[in-house]
Amino acid sequence: MPEQSLSKAKQSSNAIERLQVTMRYLFNRGAYKPNGPSGQTLKELLLLLRPEIYGDMVDKEKVELKGLIYIMDRLPNGIEGCRYIHLTTDEGYLRANFHSIIPPKRRRNCYRIDDYQMNIEITRGRSEVYDLLTHLTFLFIEGQKIMDKAYTKSTKKISREWKFLEHIALSDETLTSQERKIGLIHLSTLLGRTFQETLEAEARFSKDHDKKQFFKIIYHLGQLSIDELLRGEKRVISFSPTLRERIGHHFYGETWAHNIKKTLIKKQQLSRGLHIISANMHGALNSFYARKALGKDFKDKNDLEIYKKLSQPGSHSLREIVSQYARANGTVMIDDHSGANINVQIIDLKKVDLSETAFESIEKPHQKDLLIVMDYAFGEQAYEVMDELLKPCKDEKQLYKMNIKSISIMGKAGILDGKKGDIMVPDAHIFEGSADNYPIKNALSGDDFRGARLGVCEGLMVTVLGTSLQNKDLLKYFKNSSWGAIGLEMEGAHYQKAIQSAVNIRRHLSEDIVLRYAYYASDNPLESGSTLASGGLGLSGVKPTYLITQRILEQILSGK
Image 1 (cartoon, rainbow, N blue to C red):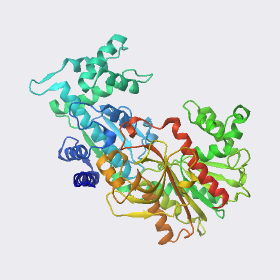
Image 2: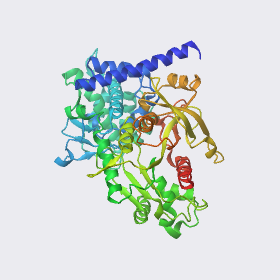
Image 3: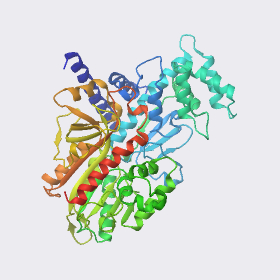
Image 4: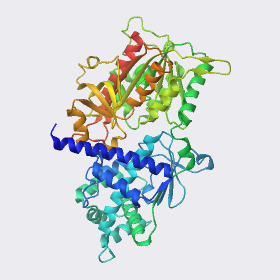
């Protein structure tokens, strides 16, 4: 590798390490000001790192719109207007009749306390803290750019474009077509973007109940920066004492795992063989039950067509039909209320009719066991929940060692040499920024997926601190060096750390435990236009998702 590229990769790795150390320090300190010395350090490190997901963040003349769309889907509605952001744990706000605001693409409860404060519940570990602080830092950087366009420091004057935007954002009047066009022209000036780029971004933000949302977001982002500059109204991010006390101590993971084991005890199923699957909540359910549940209306459709129909927006009623059928035919749903935000399905294979499914040709299928299908964990939370789940089960009388036969991890990841929708089969995970490595004896292989007209990669996966912290220099190093990495994700090494300790040290699991890992590519961070900020897979993700799911279920049913 050229020395210059290696140097950039080292700089990026160092920036990620310093970001993590700084964020942990601020978390332990309890609070910081985004425009204070510590907040400026976070901004400088993020600008040095130049994550791909944040696009043109380093361009002082342009507001990064795709990155803004990406993070606003993961932050609570209205946060752009909050001067005080308080990170808490589950401290009873919902029971105090505060309305919960849940971001579209992050499962977390958030509460607007008053006109100036937003409280955000953190229940999924340090990865969630890093994720939030990174997004908020990006938000503050973009707010500064907007202010620089709206307010001229040398003349101490507000621009006419800003005054027009303020009128739109604060007025209760319905926006006319002409006002919208004029507003978008002024907005494009404030954003440093073309009218077409601004128009496209506004369309992404526009909601039926609020056609002014994009105007309001840009206004409040800029206004908070202006208020801080002219009126000294400082923004503050703080962390509650209870959050700082609980984080890292498996507070939610222990409760979550206990609820699963309590269900197994209640149904007298502890002696059954168990197969743990970390995946989505629809793959196994639809694979077993969809065709029968939906009946004659879907008789002439193939499996993939059915899965795509169920994955479409507006198909909630169809998904509910499948869910109800599954409940009546061997599936127990455990809707999580522990705070871990990981729902669970326990599927009794004895009660699953394999006729008219992709598995009906399996000779003498093994159907004496149970599947424990758990929804996706988030980053470091994967270690917490898996570590707790693998511990022996106990009731009032005795300790029971669970008969866990296999653990399967299916997830989405960024691919380094391929395209969206391709499949990655790892043989090891490494932790980014350390020498920690976790080889895997993977029961899945690339051959299991070839012939499906999808790209397949086999090799090492990098478990990263956060997908929003990756840049091309570092990823190219992982790909092109002797590591030969094929992709990046956030949970694999955490899962494997819990599994290895359960096998080799704590002896909770047999050495014969079967492990399966496979990922489908949600993005390619090395390819322009294919990052996460460019949008999701949509229905094109259905095929790889169900292909991996079916290969896992085939192996379980075949006794492999």
